[in-house]
Image: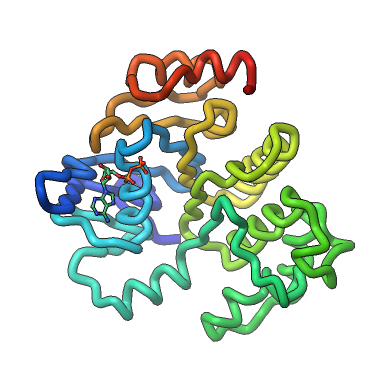
Length: 255
Ligand code: ADP
């Protein structure tokens, strides 16, 4: 596997994103994501999380600064090259699962490889579906599955191409607490089992506690970092960053 500086799957240096009229979504962000690491990115609404994710994943271009993904500098890359890099080396997991309703579980998982024009390794697909506990649901349609099961299909789909990095955008935002815990546990195990790199944007301290490290954004800048996070520690740090409402209270009550 190729990687950036010091075995990093993704590296941002001085990444700035201006939207004009004085809106600075990212004000010069420098941060690295080690190969095999599971990092949560947190921050209040408007702190730049989505912009960060889009820039780091090559979905959007920074106004200035450098993004190195899987050892390749994205600045100056053509749209075609970026699309190919994303297709071949990046996996995505979204809040709304984004499965195709008319395709079976198996077909949904196979689709990215097919679109990339690659030979589909049926054994690997079967193995992945087994790993996410859906070995007996291969022929089901997404509509026949629960939300948690659908997100497990999306995890299998994101991992099956063995991407250099998986970006997860609020992956448990649409799930109840218990299902969210199952999905996050599964994501963590998948990461450990396969040495995958995961970057997960979330506003939930419990979700963040499944990561190895939490990076906090505030006003478009990295404001803090916690290694080996617990939900309580994350919630406590959040209260210092402001504009969150009351995460500690939300955590206590899980309201
Ligand atoms: P978060 O995901 O943490 O809520 P965003 O990255 O969505 O933060 O937004 C960061 C800042 O950039 C906010 O002030 C937001 O209003 C602004 N912003 C985001 N996208 C755009 C856009 N397409 N055009 C103008 N301003 C934007």
